[in-house]
Image (cartoon, rainbow, N blue to C red; front, side, top):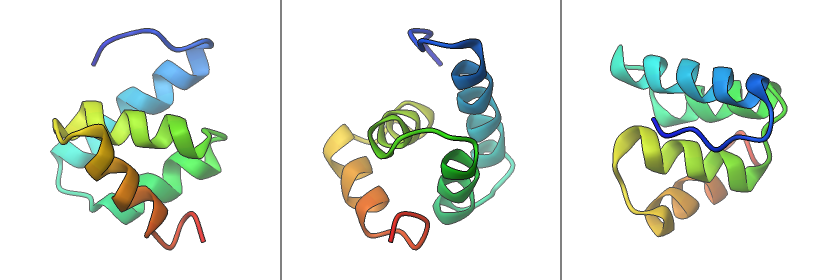
Length: 70
């Protein structure tokens, strides 16, 4: 996953989210983890897009319809 996060904590959260997806955790679990870790909705979209390879607009739809961000 590319770097570019403002803080090392954000990079660590992004790396953990990618690992969670690789072992089979669902999007909802990952988004809950990112939100609880303090990432914004936009940063969560970015992580999801980068970690899965899906377009940013699709990641936006997933994040906005998730239980984690209601």
